[in-house]
Image 1 (cartoon, rainbow, N blue to C red):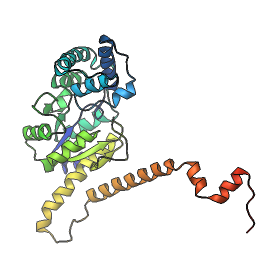
Image 2 (cartoon, rainbow, N blue to C red):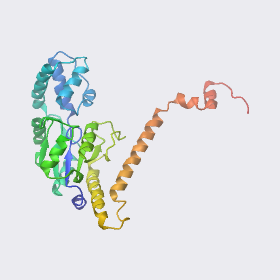
Image 3 (tube, rainbow, N blue to C red):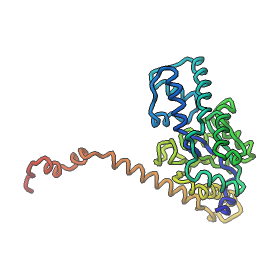
Length: 296
């Protein structure tokens, strides 16, 4: 495994919430506590999970909007400050690494890959979570939502992370779970792997990620394949025009697209109701209604 990774990318840049860590319970508890302090009812954890990914201000704005409340900027600033205090008290109470995340981090570290965090979570709490989970030493760079003037999906955070790592975009892969991550990677010219077990919409790959990851055990091969494709492209100038035109990464991409088509087909099948089937088959409809069919 390490040899294949060594032949691959020079860096992996990770999103945090919904990608490396399952933090939804602690975030939901903190938001609901904030809502209670302003005399608003709590929200279901699943509903709050769908609000995660675009930073604290957006999270709070969405939480209030669920109760038809729109704060002015000054009031929102106060609520953000209060939320950060609340959240810092419980940031690692229930938060856990997703299965296989620690092993993937270790595999890439041992292979000599540079690793970074690029998240919209504030940097101080990001570092608190990384420390609390014992993985802070895995990362050479940490870019939070308040580290720079702009955050994801603007490409600035990802480009800054890569600049600090000393790795060009074509030698890196971003791993995330949302449209924000995919948009960020595309804008920065970086390949992106979409984890299907995070807070995103699932394995139908609606955001046109380069790869779908169902299990972190699959990620080392994806990292190696992604960069092998680029390495072969560079080598083609000195090779036969037909050498290396179909590297392993091509087949990885092909398999990913096939899975997308299969998933969309399954969804379309489920969307066909019995009523629609009956309308398309008058004979069956007649039998079910008890109406005798006309003899043919």
